[in-house]
View 1 (cartoon, rainbow, N blue to C red):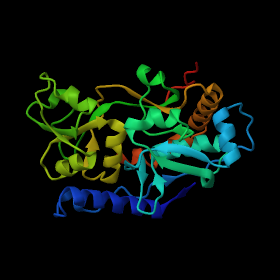
View 2 (cartoon, helix red, strand yellow):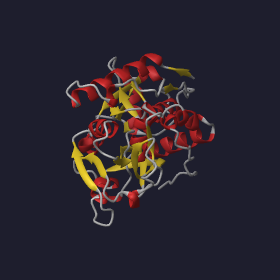
View 3 (spheres, one colour):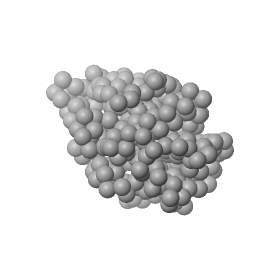
View 4 (tube, helix red, strand yellow):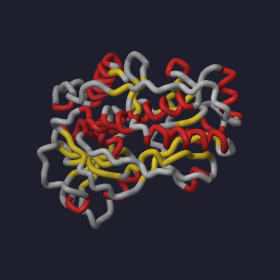
Length: 302
């Protein structure tokens, strides 16, 4: 286990750069130095030539590398810094699984994949598996396979730390709430029963900037994403912790490769039980101050 200070510093630089772009370079609360500190980066024991009858894995073994699809714009969750290095909780999950499949960190090729092409990318074999706030649902299961859930997220609210008035979605009457265009949590918050005044941005970082500047009162999306922003600025932001949806995150892979799915399920369970999972959480999303909740095991198997 070690702390990757370089990656963390780069992540901060990139996050600030994105924020500066959003606000035209003006000074403001989002332009200050995040206090989230270093991002955890773990070392995991690499399995020696595991025997797994998986077509996807055999192809990766032949290539001597494994290609993993991830997100690159979610601080402390799935983030790519200016040096090209990835860090965050989902990145740690991806590394744990790779180690159990016999691949060291040096043999991992992370590939940033946008949400709208995940199923296509997996089905076409452009990535061997995908770890990136990927909600398991019946519609997606028609196209890809899932191992997990390794984390159960839910739509929640990010607020300024000194705001004690917002304690959940039922306390948003007359409050300004921001999310990205077309997001599911925003559609929920738009319902008349909440009485919120909603606004939409193209990026969550823009919503967070507006929150820090006092232009909105809350930001809504999955709690895992919000925890990442709170981890960047734990002295200024907090996640309310009252979810109003359920989003089980899974590792996505080829729909027909049952051997790979079982192997990844085994890996997730092993690292949850041996404490690696909790260490990864504490060193990433846990920096938000949100408490750790262990996933339920055994994980589902088809």
